[in-house]
Image 1 (cartoon, rainbow, N blue to C red):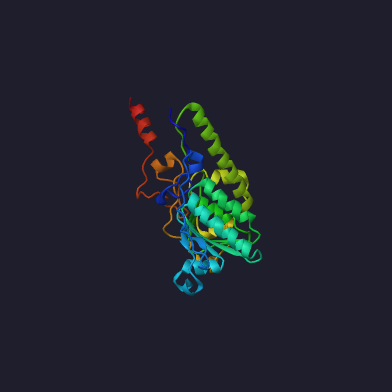
Image 2: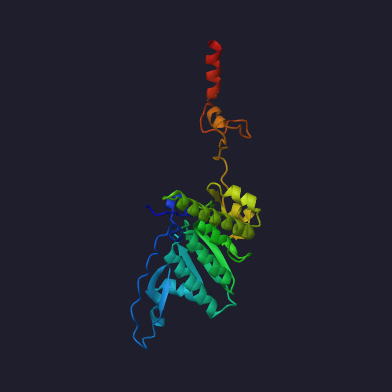
Amino acid sequence: MKSARLSTRAAAPAAGRATARRCSGQKPRSHPSLRALPQGSGEQPLIISGQPTMAPRTQDMAGDPFGLLLKKRIIFLGGEVTDFSADAVVSQLLLLDAQDPTEDIKLFINSPGGSVTAGMGIYDAMKMCRADVSTVCFGLAASMGAFLLGAGTKGKRASMPNSRIMIHQPLGGASGQAVDIEIQAREIMYHKANLNRIMSECTGQPIDRIDEDTDRDRYMSPIEAVEYGLIDYVIGGEDKTYKITGDTRAFPKTKEQYVSGGDEAEDGSSGSRFKKPLEPYTDGINKDLDRK
């Protein structure tokens, strides 16, 4: 009997989609063990940027930029969201919150997304922190990355001017017996409903609109993300985000519009990429029928 399998993809297509191991029944990746420390060495184990390393002594901190940034209460989430990277971010959040719950924690995000369950672990840790967690997008915050970006403390969610933000619904599959597939289908639908509910709370958008906008990949500029309610401001000011004008064209939304050349643009020209609009194929069929 084949085992049922379901993965929830939450990453941008270009960067590859990661699977949710806890949803699929796969065993989580084991973490490499840290070496034993001699007593009185003054060193402490610390996870930085998703890789288990040893925190250097104070005199060696100049060669460890991530350690210096962590001392400034800055955490990086880069690459796919996996169980391992989530454990790293959660441990750093809990550490910084325990050190000083009155000072903000800054979470920088450059991620194509990944595991839904791992991302929800980071989300719960952010909400459990007594300190405010400010989020900043640089590069790309897609799928679960965008979800965590919007989950920051309201008023303290930002983006770099040339970043891109993308939201969409979980994606997965299942195999096995019919009942096994039904179980996994119910699980992924639960994740979709739960993500939409939380996204609605973070953005202020109604759940129906969240459900509609995440039906397919929805890319946003930082200005669009501000208008959507996903972030609060653009670093450097909104004028730093370039609005693309002149080269954009109205994309056809239906098959008939693709065949006929698309909608008319504001200047009266066709919005299609074709220089000469094509006649709808139905016209040719009707003419042949008339001849007969």
